[in-house]
Length: 220
Image 1 (tube, rainbow, N blue to C red):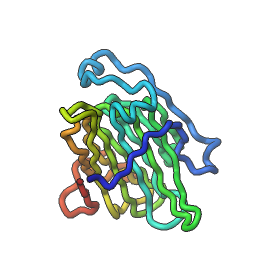
Image 2 (image 1 turned 180 degrees about the horizontal axis):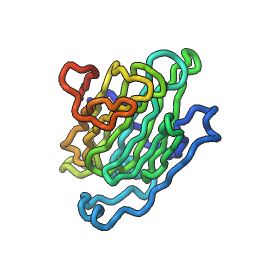
Image 3 (image 1 turned 135 degrees about the vertical axis):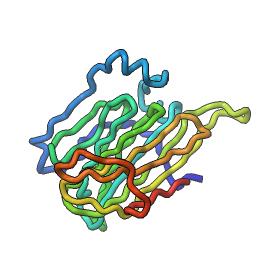
């Protein structure tokens, strides 16, 4: 049983941006994908509306940092077809390219602890790139909840849920972590995450994080 409770909701896009920065935000929307790239992708249809959360599956990515207030990191998610959603606090650029996806910040009114959340209805199967961007030096956590496409299994229409976490990962101001999320609409497959080697400010290299270098992945 997954510990994630995925709700079917009408999604809206809210740039995950500190309020004071709204005037400087640049929003990018999707452009056409080259024919050669389209042929290389799996032949899965994009969602048409928020009802796709039930029929085609759903992917929820939530994140937070130590302490109260807004998260000290930004997150940009790139889907398997190269489309992005999220906010880069270093470049002050936001993306809203993924069909039927939305982003928001949710704060507890009592503790003032806030978490960001990106929700994708009807995600296509493949590798999602999650870029965690350090606005300030912090420790972050990332939770991924997934629901498969609904299919008939002989007993009726159903889907499966799965989840994975990264906990207590240190990130420096100006650094970029890349977390690869493997998702499939197939109800027999489970979501998986792998953190890549952190990319520090001014460094273009990166790769899988060696064992014991920090950050945990908990699959259910």
